[in-house]
Length: 322
Ligand SMILES: NC(=O)c1ccc[n+]([C@@H]2O[C@H](COP(=O)([O-])OP(=O)(O)OC[C@H]3O[C@@H](n4cnc5c(N)ncnc54)[C@H](O)[C@@H]3O)[C@@H](O)[C@H]2O)c1
Image 1 (cartoon, rainbow, N blue to C red):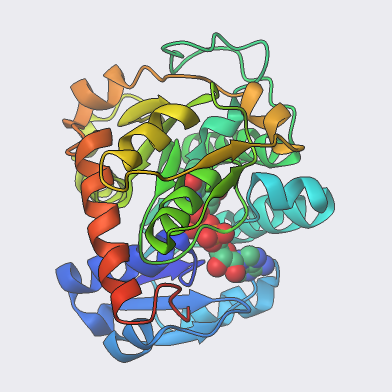
Image 2 (image 1 turned 180 degrees about the vertical axis):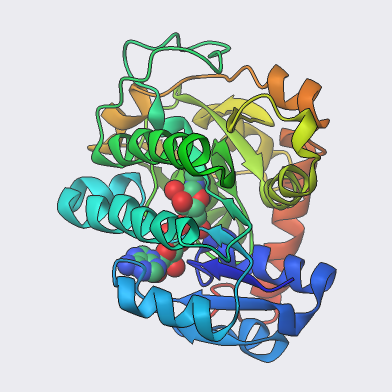
């Protein structure tokens, strides 16, 4: 099976590509990056191409040249960056997806993974234990593009019989590639500052609670969903989560390992985005339909994150060159 990963140099793509290559073979997984160069691990473990997903002709070339059968479509402009340039967010997130769906309609692509986000929810959505089927009232362009993406995927699946699967990811925390301009980036940044022994100024209030997930669970959930038997799936896009904590609770957990770690709180425009998102998520449908079960909670994740970053810090390469 020939697999394409778009957005492969991003926070999730850089690790998902390597995981897929371990599973299906290096040559079978084509990593497509945009502006950033491939890391040495990405470049040495399999094919790498440059691709702007908003450019339909370029997408056609990559898919035809590599006889692509499945796509993990991760290319996107995230929530905070999207508020700086809503037009670009629409162009990449909606037009890029539309280009891909149109190519799939023409034949050849058997399966598409399209990550959605808790950003599809909004101020009119219940904020605790947010159900899968509920009010979608996003206030960011990112959220608008994710709701549009979910609807487009539903339409193409029903109308043209395409196999498209999606997850509404919460904030993803990882140690390898820094996050790309989302509202939950503070949860990753806090770890980097703690390891460097620097105080951190957090861009949301201390009592801001959001749902989160550690990268190994993020990768596992995407692969498990794509490998699940069609017969078990009763939804196209699933709510999914692993843990919820406030910014202050995260700082306190880090302090158990790094005593004296100081955090100040100076909310900026991202506070309003965070305030419009759920505090916790009901992912019972994912658990019952295809067996979703996260491995990491806050203590386990904190221990692993700090160990991974401390090791890189000691080696003088805390910030990877991806
Ligand atoms: N990281 C999270 O916390 C999170 C949470 C929910 C959903 N998601 C979703 O998961 C997916 C991957 O997110 P991520 O965190 O890896 O994001 P990221 O910003 O780290 O990576 C996205 C990648 O897309 C690329 N890109 C931007 N414009 C492009 C274009 N025109 N053509 C091709 N590539 C382009 C960027 O260069 C970047 O490498 C996205 O769909 C995102 O919405 C992420």
